[in-house]
Length: 614
Image (tube, rainbow, N blue to C red; front, top):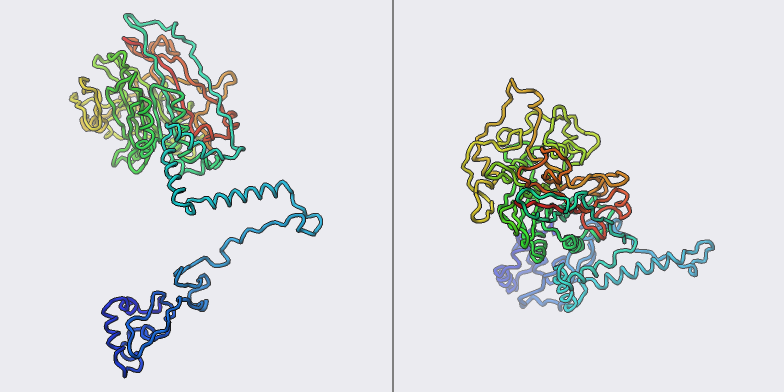
């Protein structure tokens, strides 16, 4: 069609062209129309069928023009050099059809001859394989016959209704239908669930001494769980090639994730990689039906997942909630979209007591330990401020999340010891995710810019005592408002007076960062009795520990008897027990993560604590 002028092709379809044609056809003396309108194709006025205009039909009969009877507009195949080898014959029913050349098409499946049909000796087929192949072929054909495209209207409507009902994992019919839909997972993929048991701490409840004038403590459980965002799973599908494709579908994973959360029945949930659309439509309604209240912070930029802190309203009440963003516009170091969320909760049985819960997901990149340390400094500064009491003491703190750092890394030591000397430390060795650093870059001094408003003690610089609540901070009515402004508002109110290098200052102090939170891990990171490493995440590339539940211990219950690891007034947390983890050999037996029983590449962490009431 490229050889035809565009103007005649379009002008024939308009009324003014037909009127012009009618006036010409009434002229009996007009011999041929080649001289009248030279810019019109001649075949538009003759009685011969057009060579390639399926929509052409003779109109407006004239005295000298008698059109032939209408017949289906079928045309001969044009020469191959006209449209090319890949052109197929056109007709009025299918229009233009361009297909791949014959050499690119898949050959039709060939049926292998049976032993009766093959007269050549020694070429008999394996009967079992032949039967298995025939059965598989029949299943594939039956699935094609029952595809939605060929269903009747009633069948399609019934299937749509079933999908809508099955989208709610907490309804009995929906859960059964969703589970039945995936019952055809091949038997070879069936694996037993991981055996995890409850490990009580050596210190029992009866052994816990009460503080002077105190009453019985408030016991609660905390879960930290990276549920694996579906968008991240799809973007990093190469990490899950060992998994059955069916167990990676969100329709399969969601009911099992919620079922696992419901089975553990934790009072506080710290979730990471919570996809926003799934959280709004599915996760939050399901958790609210179980009596939870949800606080959520989406990652900045174009990322679709975020962090959530969920707690039971029957046991806890929210005092304040503050999202933390690590991204700083114009800062070449803090240019990532990771976030955190800090909340302050109070037991329903003792409104005078409170504690702080922080949840975060730090940067994954193993070679950017400098970014991880800067992100962690922002989170610790916010936790320090929100946990500060009017009398100068500090509330107990729970720090949960995916820190993308191993238990023997400098970053983990910084969290648990409160100090890090980073002079000469390679950037790639901060998180411990790689045994050997692939970069020779070292951490520089200072670690972050002075404009951040955070000193080397991981605290906001004191410059303005007027701290009013701003931004997205949610506070309980009647609470003091100077403890929970947003990070952005707090930074704007602070006077940047970072500790500049002092000539009289010790050089070792300049290459050191510290924090005043005395944090301990609720896990030992070693399995007893063989001492193997505990694993919290496993996929085709690695199997390590990166998830933690850290807490500020009270001196009587803390593993360390030193007074430096306790909070004044007996307001620390006492670890009562935890859900055991597994090692690499146990994960190899279940084909890694995710699998049919565990729908994330992370294992949930669960610990029980006691908050001594004043």
